[in-house]
Image 1: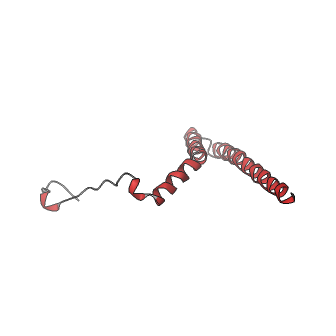
Image 2: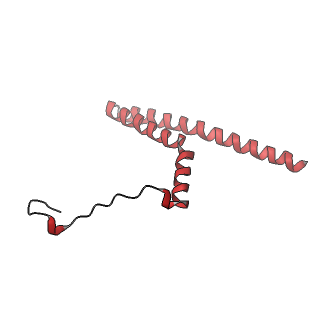
Image 3: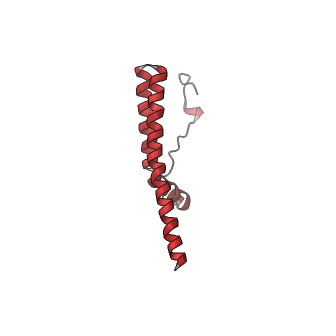
Length: 99
């Protein structure tokens, strides 16, 4: 009975830390964008910081899907689409092309 309560407490603690981590990441990224804009005082820096924040948040939100894709690729390499192979034959190239 006590083990069940401790299990629920552990799950609740892990969920709380995970929720705080996601919210904390967003808050830290927003602070970094504001600091970058204030430090550089340029529109180009502001746009770059915002684009960087969007990319980081996109990767963070898709982390479970990306990890599933990576796991599937490692465990089932035969099911993936094959790599594109480009064969360069120097004997068929003329003098115009440079390698």
